[in-house]
Length: 188
Length: 130
Image 1 (tube, chains in turn green, yellow):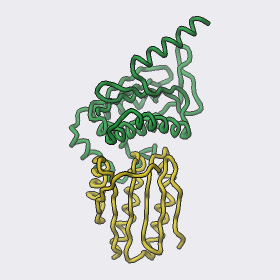
Image 2 (image 1 turned 30 degrees about the vertical axis):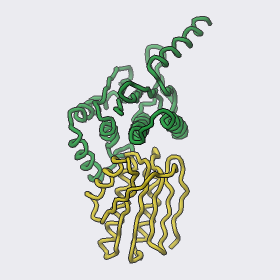
Image 3 (image 1 turned 90 degrees about the vertical axis):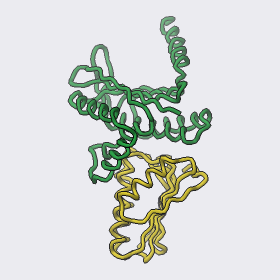
Image 4 (image 1 turned 60 degrees about the vertical axis):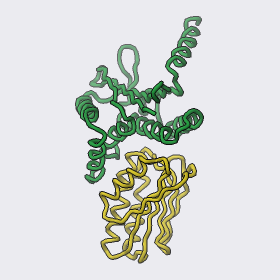
């Protein structure tokens, strides 16, 4: 039991050191996303004086949470492997950094979709802001919807508002799944 | 034809479409997970309205936030208006954005570049939450 208690302190210490404003791990429902967004908005109102920055960070959090919700293999870690979950499952963390804010998300995705996502992220990272705007406009007007109901616009929008490169990693797991981690730095 | 009115929610905008005046309003925030479900009744309404539109039709868009899944649906709303305009009705989109929100102004400009309907960009002080 004392080991567990030490871990509470370690966790607190860790969250404090990384200036985490909010973190959540578990199953995500639309209702829960509404609650998390409400908390993020209140925090930002309290600490970020610049309205444009507040909006950019909030927009990135909205898109990241919705990516987490829609592109999710509904798995969680158990022992050395994974177990299915009823709802989309993942982790989200929003931290204050010297240059702005970090929005971190992590979730399991279908292994077969990793390559496509990686190529998409690399293409976004090699694009200039003008390229991104052009690309967004072209995708917006092409008249197609993706399976999730968007138009494959989410990551492009996140990159446009971030103003930096998208940092990502994939960790392969069993059952043709991979853990996808994304760090979006929003410079303010 | 009946007006369409929906109260705003933390994730969906206030909607008021009035066939008698030709005034259509979309205000607040549009960040639902399933935007298609939310926008389908709006698009169906405009479709029906387009059969006997008011000689002057104006859509006011005053959004504080919208997500990328809404952006495609909003484009579909504009496309319906484009079709109504092609039928000879005077149609205008009034795109409201907060003074400090250049992202929202850019988004309006992007739509204006895609859709063949005159857009008026209107700078406002601040959008009330929801």
